[in-house]
Length: 338
Image (tube, rainbow, N blue to C red; front, side, top):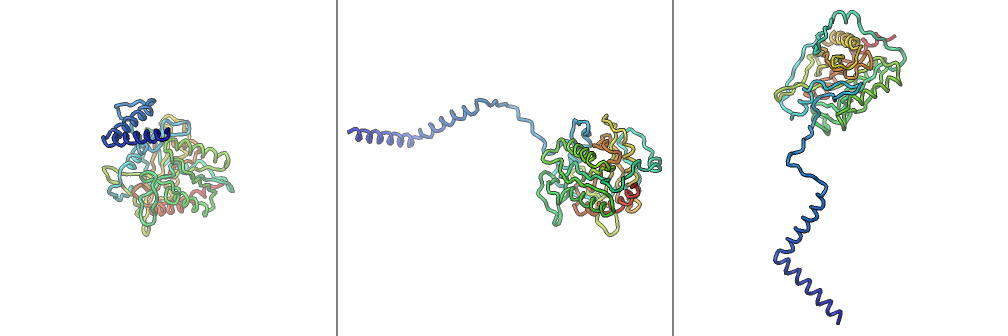
Protein backbone atom coordinates (compact mmCIF):
# COMPACT_ATOMS: atom_id res chain seq x y z
CA UNK A 1 0.00 0.00 0.00
CA UNK A 2 2.79 2.37 0.90
CA UNK A 3 4.49 1.60 -2.40
CA UNK A 4 1.30 2.46 -4.27
CA UNK A 5 1.09 5.82 -2.47
CA UNK A 6 4.70 6.60 -3.38
CA UNK A 7 4.04 5.83 -7.03
CA UNK A 8 0.95 8.00 -7.01
CA UNK A 9 2.91 10.88 -5.42
CA UNK A 10 5.68 10.62 -8.00
CA UNK A 11 3.08 10.67 -10.74
CA UNK A 12 1.48 13.82 -9.37
CA UNK A 13 4.86 15.58 -9.15
CA UNK A 14 5.74 14.63 -12.73
CA UNK A 15 2.34 15.84 -13.96
CA UNK A 16 2.76 19.15 -12.12
CA UNK A 17 6.21 19.74 -13.65
CA UNK A 18 4.82 18.98 -17.10
CA UNK A 19 2.00 21.50 -16.63
CA UNK A 20 4.41 24.15 -15.33
CA UNK A 21 6.71 23.66 -18.28
CA UNK A 22 3.81 23.88 -20.65
CA UNK A 23 2.77 27.20 -19.12
CA UNK A 24 6.33 28.62 -19.36
CA UNK A 25 6.66 28.81 -15.60
CA UNK A 26 9.62 26.46 -15.57
CA UNK A 27 11.60 28.87 -17.72
CA UNK A 28 10.72 31.80 -15.45
CA UNK A 29 11.70 29.82 -12.38
CA UNK A 30 15.00 28.96 -14.04
CA UNK A 31 15.66 32.63 -14.81
CA UNK A 32 14.81 33.60 -11.24
CA UNK A 33 17.18 30.99 -9.89
CA UNK A 34 20.00 32.16 -12.25
CA UNK A 35 19.41 35.77 -11.11
CA UNK A 36 19.81 34.75 -7.47
CA UNK A 37 23.04 32.87 -8.30
CA UNK A 38 24.43 35.83 -10.28
CA UNK A 39 23.55 38.21 -7.47
CA UNK A 40 25.58 36.08 -5.11
CA UNK A 41 28.56 36.11 -7.49
CA UNK A 42 28.47 39.93 -7.81
CA UNK A 43 28.40 40.51 -4.06
CA UNK A 44 32.10 41.61 -3.93
CA UNK A 45 32.21 43.48 -7.25
CA UNK A 46 31.51 47.20 -7.60
CA UNK A 47 30.16 48.43 -10.92
CA UNK A 48 31.05 51.87 -12.21
CA UNK A 49 29.26 53.78 -14.91
CA UNK A 50 32.58 55.22 -16.08
CA UNK A 51 34.53 53.07 -18.56
CA UNK A 52 37.76 51.58 -17.29
CA UNK A 53 40.92 53.18 -18.68
CA UNK A 54 42.27 51.28 -21.68
CA UNK A 55 45.88 50.16 -21.68
CA UNK A 56 47.74 51.23 -24.81
CA UNK A 57 48.62 48.46 -27.26
CA UNK A 58 52.13 49.90 -27.54
CA UNK A 59 54.25 51.92 -25.12
CA UNK A 60 53.95 55.69 -25.35
CA UNK A 61 57.67 56.05 -25.90
CA UNK A 62 60.60 53.89 -27.05
CA UNK A 63 62.25 53.76 -23.61
CA UNK A 64 60.59 53.40 -20.20
CA UNK A 65 60.12 56.11 -17.60
CA UNK A 66 60.56 57.15 -14.88
CA UNK A 67 64.05 55.77 -14.99
CA UNK A 68 66.10 54.02 -12.35
CA UNK A 69 69.74 55.06 -12.07
CA UNK A 70 70.78 53.02 -15.09
CA UNK A 71 67.81 53.81 -17.26
CA UNK A 72 67.14 56.79 -19.49
CA UNK A 73 63.84 58.67 -19.31
CA UNK A 74 61.36 58.37 -22.15
CA UNK A 75 62.78 59.56 -25.47
CA UNK A 76 61.27 60.43 -28.84
CA UNK A 77 57.70 59.14 -29.11
CA UNK A 78 57.71 58.99 -32.93
CA UNK A 79 58.87 55.39 -33.19
CA UNK A 80 56.22 54.12 -30.78
CA UNK A 81 53.52 56.18 -32.48
CA UNK A 82 54.49 54.79 -35.87
CA UNK A 83 54.44 51.22 -34.60
CA UNK A 84 50.90 51.73 -33.27
CA UNK A 85 49.62 52.59 -36.75
CA UNK A 86 48.46 50.04 -39.29
CA UNK A 87 50.80 49.45 -42.17
CA UNK A 88 50.35 52.18 -44.77
CA UNK A 89 52.22 53.31 -47.82
CA UNK A 90 55.97 52.62 -47.71
CA UNK A 91 58.23 55.22 -49.32
CA UNK A 92 61.97 55.18 -49.84
CA UNK A 93 64.22 57.89 -48.46
CA UNK A 94 67.96 58.47 -48.33
CA UNK A 95 69.08 60.72 -45.47
CA UNK A 96 72.43 62.37 -46.15
CA UNK A 97 74.83 61.79 -43.28
CA UNK A 98 78.54 62.29 -43.69
CA UNK A 99 79.99 63.87 -40.55
CA UNK A 100 76.84 65.78 -39.73
CA UNK A 101 75.48 65.64 -36.18
CA UNK A 102 71.76 65.93 -35.55
CA UNK A 103 72.11 67.73 -32.23
CA UNK A 104 68.91 67.59 -30.16
CA UNK A 105 70.64 68.94 -27.05
CA UNK A 106 71.68 72.37 -25.88
CA UNK A 107 75.36 71.40 -25.91
CA UNK A 108 77.78 72.90 -28.38
CA UNK A 109 79.85 70.26 -30.16
CA UNK A 110 83.08 70.75 -32.08
CA UNK A 111 83.10 67.92 -34.60
CA UNK A 112 86.55 68.71 -35.99
CA UNK A 113 88.11 68.74 -32.52
CA UNK A 114 86.53 65.43 -31.53
CA UNK A 115 87.71 63.84 -34.76
CA UNK A 116 91.25 65.10 -34.24
CA UNK A 117 91.31 63.74 -30.69
CA UNK A 118 89.96 60.34 -31.71
CA UNK A 119 88.39 57.76 -29.36
CA UNK A 120 89.70 57.85 -25.80
CA UNK A 121 89.85 54.09 -25.43
CA UNK A 122 91.95 51.08 -26.35
CA UNK A 123 90.87 47.46 -26.79
CA UNK A 124 92.86 44.95 -24.71
CA UNK A 125 94.37 42.16 -26.80
CA UNK A 126 93.28 38.58 -26.20
CA UNK A 127 90.11 39.49 -24.25
CA UNK A 128 86.44 40.09 -24.89
CA UNK A 129 86.47 43.69 -26.11
CA UNK A 130 82.98 44.33 -27.49
CA UNK A 131 79.51 43.58 -26.14
CA UNK A 132 76.59 43.52 -28.59
CA UNK A 133 73.23 43.74 -26.85
CA UNK A 134 69.60 44.49 -27.78
CA UNK A 135 67.47 46.49 -25.34
CA UNK A 136 64.54 46.16 -27.74
CA UNK A 137 65.31 42.73 -29.13
CA UNK A 138 61.79 42.09 -30.45
CA UNK A 139 62.03 44.89 -33.02
CA UNK A 140 61.42 43.44 -36.48
CA UNK A 141 61.05 44.56 -40.08
CA UNK A 142 58.46 44.63 -42.85
CA UNK A 143 57.71 41.04 -43.80
CA UNK A 144 58.77 40.12 -47.31
CA UNK A 145 59.79 37.05 -49.29
CA UNK A 146 60.64 34.15 -47.00
CA UNK A 147 61.08 36.43 -44.00
CA UNK A 148 57.71 35.80 -42.36
CA UNK A 149 57.16 35.74 -38.62
CA UNK A 150 54.48 35.52 -35.97
CA UNK A 151 54.14 39.07 -34.69
CA UNK A 152 53.82 39.55 -30.93
CA UNK A 153 52.97 43.21 -31.61
CA UNK A 154 53.04 45.54 -34.59
CA UNK A 155 56.46 45.08 -36.25
CA UNK A 156 57.74 42.99 -33.32
CA UNK A 157 58.46 39.31 -32.83
CA UNK A 158 60.21 37.15 -30.26
CA UNK A 159 61.56 34.96 -33.07
CA UNK A 160 65.30 35.74 -33.17
CA UNK A 161 65.52 34.45 -36.74
CA UNK A 162 63.58 37.51 -37.90
CA UNK A 163 64.05 40.30 -35.36
CA UNK A 164 66.94 42.66 -34.63
CA UNK A 165 68.84 39.87 -32.85
CA UNK A 166 69.42 38.32 -36.28
CA UNK A 167 71.11 41.57 -37.34
CA UNK A 168 73.27 41.37 -34.23
CA UNK A 169 74.28 37.84 -35.20
CA UNK A 170 75.64 39.16 -38.49
CA UNK A 171 77.49 42.01 -36.81
CA UNK A 172 79.08 39.69 -34.26
CA UNK A 173 80.14 37.16 -36.90
CA UNK A 174 81.92 39.76 -39.05
CA UNK A 175 83.67 41.32 -36.05
CA UNK A 176 84.83 37.89 -34.91
CA UNK A 177 86.12 37.05 -38.38
CA UNK A 178 88.15 40.25 -38.21
CA UNK A 179 89.80 39.07 -34.99
CA UNK A 180 87.86 41.18 -32.50
CA UNK A 181 86.82 39.72 -29.15
CA UNK A 182 83.02 39.85 -29.18
CA UNK A 183 80.19 38.58 -27.01
CA UNK A 184 76.64 38.79 -28.34
CA UNK A 185 73.81 38.86 -25.82
CA UNK A 186 70.79 37.43 -27.69
CA UNK A 187 68.37 37.90 -24.79
CA UNK A 188 65.14 39.81 -25.50
CA UNK A 189 64.60 42.47 -22.83
CA UNK A 190 61.44 44.14 -24.16
CA UNK A 191 59.13 41.11 -24.33
CA UNK A 192 56.72 40.23 -22.86
CA UNK A 193 57.04 43.55 -20.99
CA UNK A 194 58.31 46.62 -22.86
CA UNK A 195 58.37 48.73 -19.70
CA UNK A 196 61.66 48.34 -17.86
CA UNK A 197 63.60 47.08 -20.88
CA UNK A 198 66.45 49.56 -20.34
CA UNK A 199 66.67 48.58 -16.68
CA UNK A 200 66.96 44.92 -17.61
CA UNK A 201 69.48 45.41 -20.41
CA UNK A 202 71.48 47.80 -18.24
CA UNK A 203 71.70 45.24 -15.43
CA UNK A 204 72.82 42.63 -17.96
CA UNK A 205 75.48 44.97 -19.36
CA UNK A 206 76.84 45.63 -15.86
CA UNK A 207 77.05 41.89 -15.26
CA UNK A 208 78.99 41.40 -18.50
CA UNK A 209 81.37 44.21 -17.52
CA UNK A 210 82.07 42.44 -14.21
CA UNK A 211 82.62 39.06 -15.87
CA UNK A 212 84.60 40.42 -18.83
CA UNK A 213 86.57 43.44 -17.62
CA UNK A 214 88.20 43.83 -21.03
CA UNK A 215 84.97 45.09 -22.61
CA UNK A 216 85.48 48.63 -23.85
CA UNK A 217 82.71 48.97 -26.45
CA UNK A 218 79.00 48.31 -25.92
CA UNK A 219 76.81 48.38 -29.03
CA UNK A 220 73.06 48.37 -28.40
CA UNK A 221 71.61 47.40 -31.78
CA UNK A 222 68.08 48.57 -32.65
CA UNK A 223 65.72 49.04 -35.58
CA UNK A 224 64.37 52.57 -36.11
CA UNK A 225 60.83 53.66 -37.06
CA UNK A 226 60.22 56.61 -39.37
CA UNK A 227 56.99 57.97 -40.76
CA UNK A 228 54.21 60.54 -40.71
CA UNK A 229 50.66 61.02 -41.99
CA UNK A 230 50.11 57.33 -42.69
CA UNK A 231 53.38 56.99 -44.62
CA UNK A 232 56.12 54.64 -43.41
CA UNK A 233 59.63 55.32 -44.66
CA UNK A 234 62.33 52.84 -45.52
CA UNK A 235 65.85 54.19 -45.56
CA UNK A 236 67.91 53.34 -48.62
CA UNK A 237 71.69 53.39 -48.95
CA UNK A 238 72.53 54.20 -52.55
CA UNK A 239 75.35 51.70 -52.74
CA UNK A 240 76.12 50.08 -56.09
CA UNK A 241 75.14 46.44 -56.43
CA UNK A 242 73.44 46.10 -53.03
CA UNK A 243 69.95 46.78 -51.68
CA UNK A 244 70.63 48.03 -48.17
CA UNK A 245 69.00 50.21 -45.54
CA UNK A 246 70.86 53.03 -43.85
CA UNK A 247 72.48 52.96 -40.41
CA UNK A 248 72.43 55.58 -37.67
CA UNK A 249 74.64 55.98 -34.59
CA UNK A 250 72.92 57.50 -31.56
CA UNK A 251 74.76 59.06 -28.61
CA UNK A 252 73.15 59.95 -25.30
CA UNK A 253 74.13 62.77 -22.93
CA UNK A 254 73.45 63.91 -19.37
CA UNK A 255 71.10 66.72 -20.34
CA UNK A 256 68.12 64.78 -18.99
CA UNK A 257 69.60 65.14 -15.50
CA UNK A 258 71.01 61.63 -15.13
CA UNK A 259 74.72 61.28 -14.46
CA UNK A 260 76.73 60.64 -17.62
CA UNK A 261 80.11 62.41 -17.42
CA UNK A 262 81.78 60.59 -20.34
CA UNK A 263 79.27 61.18 -23.11
CA UNK A 264 81.80 63.12 -25.16
CA UNK A 265 83.98 59.99 -25.26
CA UNK A 266 81.06 58.09 -26.74
CA UNK A 267 80.52 60.86 -29.28
CA UNK A 268 84.19 60.74 -30.24
CA UNK A 269 83.90 57.00 -30.93
CA UNK A 270 80.71 57.55 -32.95
CA UNK A 271 82.38 60.19 -35.12
CA UNK A 272 85.45 57.98 -35.57
CA UNK A 273 83.31 55.09 -36.85
CA UNK A 274 81.05 57.41 -38.83
CA UNK A 275 84.06 58.83 -40.65
CA UNK A 276 85.61 55.45 -41.47
CA UNK A 277 82.37 53.83 -42.62
CA UNK A 278 81.34 56.88 -44.67
CA UNK A 279 84.66 56.81 -46.50
CA UNK A 280 83.87 53.27 -47.68
CA UNK A 281 80.12 53.76 -48.16
CA UNK A 282 79.17 57.44 -48.60
CA UNK A 283 75.39 56.95 -48.40
CA UNK A 284 75.18 54.24 -45.75
CA UNK A 285 75.27 56.43 -42.65
CA UNK A 286 72.59 58.82 -41.50
CA UNK A 287 73.71 61.81 -39.38
CA UNK A 288 74.93 60.97 -35.88
CA UNK A 289 72.08 61.61 -33.45
CA UNK A 290 72.95 63.40 -30.18
CA UNK A 291 70.09 63.27 -27.68
CA UNK A 292 69.26 64.30 -24.10
CA UNK A 293 68.73 60.78 -22.71
CA UNK A 294 71.63 58.54 -21.80
CA UNK A 295 70.29 55.07 -22.74
CA UNK A 296 72.65 53.16 -20.39
CA UNK A 297 75.64 54.68 -22.19
CA UNK A 298 77.11 55.87 -18.89
CA UNK A 299 78.20 52.28 -18.25
CA UNK A 300 81.18 52.45 -20.61
CA UNK A 301 83.04 55.26 -22.42
CA UNK A 302 82.58 53.30 -25.66
CA UNK A 303 78.80 52.86 -25.65
CA UNK A 304 76.61 53.54 -28.68
CA UNK A 305 73.18 52.75 -30.04
CA UNK A 306 73.14 51.51 -33.64
CA UNK A 307 69.85 51.90 -35.50
CA UNK A 308 69.84 49.56 -38.51
CA UNK A 309 67.15 50.42 -41.01
CA UNK A 310 63.58 51.36 -40.21
CA UNK A 311 60.28 49.55 -39.83
CA UNK A 312 59.66 50.09 -43.56
CA UNK A 313 62.79 48.13 -44.45
CA UNK A 314 62.98 44.37 -44.87
CA UNK A 315 65.23 42.08 -42.87
CA UNK A 316 67.38 41.42 -45.92
CA UNK A 317 67.96 45.16 -46.43
CA UNK A 318 68.98 45.48 -42.78
CA UNK A 319 71.34 42.51 -43.05
CA UNK A 320 72.95 44.01 -46.16
CA UNK A 321 73.42 47.29 -44.29
CA UNK A 322 75.00 45.76 -41.20
CA UNK A 323 77.42 43.79 -43.37
CA UNK A 324 78.60 46.99 -45.06
CA UNK A 325 78.89 48.73 -41.70
CA UNK A 326 80.68 45.86 -39.95
CA UNK A 327 83.24 45.30 -42.69
CA UNK A 328 84.18 48.98 -42.64
CA UNK A 329 84.00 49.41 -38.85
CA UNK A 330 85.97 46.27 -37.93
CA UNK A 331 89.36 47.51 -39.24
CA UNK A 332 88.79 50.85 -37.50
CA UNK A 333 88.13 49.08 -34.21
CA UNK A 334 91.13 46.81 -34.73
CA UNK A 335 93.31 49.92 -34.90
CA UNK A 336 92.24 50.70 -31.33
CA UNK A 337 93.62 47.38 -30.04
CA UNK A 338 96.57 47.52 -27.68
